[in-house]
Length: 279
Image (cartoon, one colour):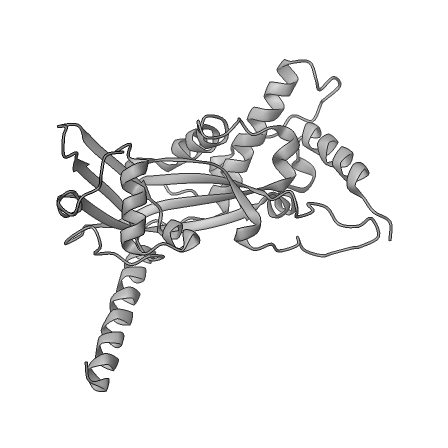
C-alpha cells in the first residue's frame, strides 16, 4: 500500500470511528446518576438484610432508597450490563490517619478484580433494569459469592448501555475496544444453538485479538468440541458499542455525604480502625 493510500485508509478508519461514536452520543448515554442508582440499590438491600437479621439495633438512619424523580434517568428502554469490581487485596482502601486528601485516590482499572457482571441484550426500562441488574450481578452471578457489606468500601461499579447494533460480515469484522460482539451458532455435531457476548472492553483488557476473543466466546457459550474453521465461518456475529460510566464507592460516598446508611458507616469505621497507620 502506497504512503498516500495508507494515510487515506487511516483517515477513513478514524472518520468511521468518529461517526460511530457520534451515533452513540445521539442515543442514551450512561451517567453518574445511573451509577448512584445502582449503589443505592445495593446498599439498601445490604442494610435491609442486616436489619432483618437483628444486626443493626438502634439504627434510625434508614437509607433513602431510589429517588428516580431527583435523577436524570431517561424513560427509555435499553440493553445494559452492570459490573461490580473489587479493589485487589494488595491495594489499600484507606489512607494513613494523618493524611488528608480532597478527592478519592485514583486506581487503575487493572487494580480491580471482577466481582460480578450480569445484564441483558433485550431492551428494558432503564429505571427498573438498573435496580434489577445491580442486585443480580452483586448477589446472583454464579461465578462469585454474593457481595458482602464489608466489601462495599472497595467496590467499583460500571454501567454499560448497549447501543449501535449492526451485523458483521464475519466473526472478525469488529474492532477490539470499540465494539462488543454477540455470537450465535450451531455446533458441528448437534442442532443445539449457542450464543454469548463480550462487552467492548473485554478483548483489550485480556490482550486478545479478534480471533482469540471469538474462540473464548465459543467456550463461554458452552461449546467444548473442536472449533473448526467451518464452525467459525458459520458464526453469526453482531457488533455493538457501549456507553459506559464507572463510579467507585469513594466517589459515591462524596456524593451521598450524610445520607449514607448507618450500617455502612459502622463497617467503614471498623475497617479504618483496623487498617489505619500513624506515620
